[in-house]
Amino acid sequence: MLVVAKEPVPGRVKTRLCPPLSPAQAASVAAAALADTLEAVARCGADRRILALAGRPGPWLPAGFEVVPQVRGPLGLRLAAAWSHAGGPGVQIGMDTPQVTPSMLDAALGLVAGGDSRTAVLGPAEDGGWWALGLRRWRRGVFHGVPMSTAQTAARQRDRLRALGLAVTDLPVLRDVDTADDAVAVAAAVPSSRTADVVRSVLTGTQSG
Figure (cartoon, rainbow, N blue to C red):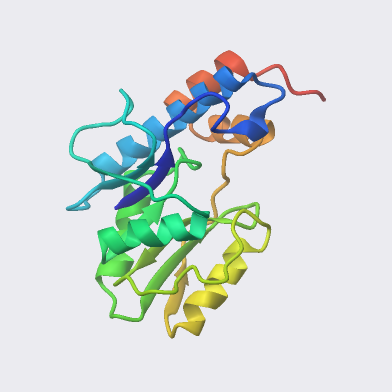
């Protein structure tokens, strides 16, 4: 399992939560989401757990992770460098879907590990991006020409994988925590999570309507 994430520093993470949140509050949501995500990864059946991190590790990092620094540059370049280090077979996720569960990750890993060299999996997000990408083996050019953080990112990523001759299986659609509405919805879906605790403390009640 490969997790690509940023250190939850105020002003550098979850900036679309501001407003209604302050940068410090947004960073607290990010820290909780990252902790929930890493816990799910720690509890899944992967035999190797890698965190490609922009920043420094904090108390949210469980034991058993190999931490590597992200390279500088656009997101596609950073993802490619992380995958080049990790190799495969594997599945990559970010820190925006704290509702992910160990069983969901195990299912994705099973699809990748049980396939052949053409196997790929893609987890679409509700906003048009993607929350997970799995490959039987890493190959150069996976992210070439794919626009990141747009409503067409998942579709373009799927097209790119197919253009490389890969057979793509879709994973369940999940909702990223990007906006205040997203945070409230994800917290409601996983009410016992760290993310839900933080969202209830800093965000619930601030939504209009």
